[in-house]
Amino acid sequence: MSNDVRIRRLPAEDLAKNFEEVIPPYTDQEAVTEAGRCLFCYDAPCIRACPTHIDIPSFIKKISTDNLRGSARVILASNPLGLTCSRVCPVEQLCEGACVLGAHHKPIAIGRLQRHATDWLSTAREAPFTAGRWLGKKVAVIGAGPAGLSCAITLRQLGHEVTCYEARPKPGGLDTFGIVSFREPVAIALAEARFAEQAGVKFVLGTRVGQDVPLDRLFEEFDAVFLAAGLGQVPRLGIEGEGLPEVLDALEFIERTKTQALDQIAIGRRVAVIGAGNTAIDAATAAKRLGAEEVSIVYRRSLAEMPAYAFEYDFAKMDGVIFRWLTAPVRVVGEQGHVTGLECERMKLGAPGPDGRAKPEAIAASAFTLPVDMVIKAVGQEGRFEWLAPLGLAVKAGRFVVDPQTGATSHPKLFAAGDCAGEGGAEATVVAVVEAGKRAALGIDARLGGPALRAGTGPSQARILGAPIPLRPASASPVYVPQGVHA
Image (cartoon, rainbow, N blue to C red; front, side):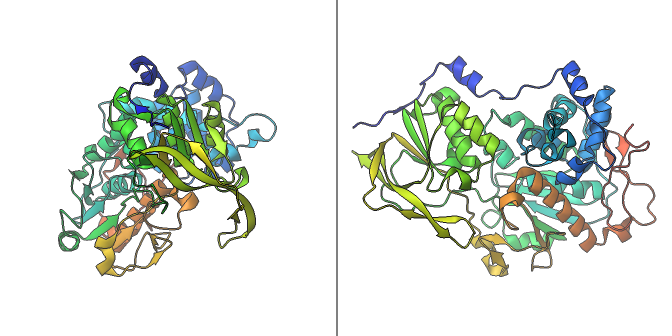
């Protein structure tokens, strides 16, 4: 059996169309009509369900009166990465899942309305965020992904100087490199990084802290350091044949679709994706859209245990992805140095494991070989943080232990949030790490004495689209005030 991996399985125009955003934007009339369905609940459950606590009824009300500028202010006051989150949030599990209209009708399309309210910002010349008065403190941010950008923008609003170190040549982290373009185009992620730069955040790109810049130097030069480094790589499977050239990391594969010409990306005729999380779904659908004839997701548990969201599963099925449940890979088969198959065995579910999920057990004499030309690994993520080992930080399940309210670590000058910190799982969604970045900024501000430094300095200079941001005296947290501020 020969290996069949090549470029240009589809014409260039078909590839371009396949990687356009799947969900189209609303027209003005469609948005006003959808906004008109909202009940504008007083104690809105959608606000409580949103990790960043956007005042959803308020921004929708402004759309209904064609006030997109005011609507965008409401969103950005709570979520500085509102453009990205309007596209990638699991709204079915969050705000839209909590909508009172969902029980007997159809929930308000909150995500699409948020996108309608904020998309114009991506091409506008105006800077959405204006920094607060400088308080004389400097903060280093390591990582320019969602958590890093959220923290950096919030720190600038609070009046701190921020320098952001990013290992990659462009900012945005996961949003730029790790989310397929038909969900979020690169231009949207880079626009939000531009918002941070316009607010005064200094970016040092292509620079890896711990390698190009010593960590000790940051502790010497800055008053606080915020760690927002992503995990960035898929763990090894530990099976024979894993080193063959057509065995790819899912994150690496998705990055290719965002950084290379689509007609120059090689794809197998038959592709197996190992894993059933959201990244696995992205990799599988991207492979299908690049022209793979058959794409199979291989998962050792059943549909009930699948980590991916239900809407992701439905989307993959519509794209023609095959799901092979209770199937575990045991060996990548190769001939003449190239992948020709994936040897698997059937599984059954046994007693619950430590995580509460049923533990898969191999069925004797059930081995079979799935003919494939390419294997994509999507079995979770892990980071490499050996450069932080001298700090002796507390670690749990591969992530740094932090105070969930402030992001503080066991080191007095180091704070952390994002994929590298916390519990993972639901906390690792983009919207959750945006909120964690905001909380860490407030924790840093409190540690640096921000509230006391601002006392008696007069009204804050911080603005969102020209409007002042009220500050709580206790925490100096930017908050939304409906009356008059966001008119």
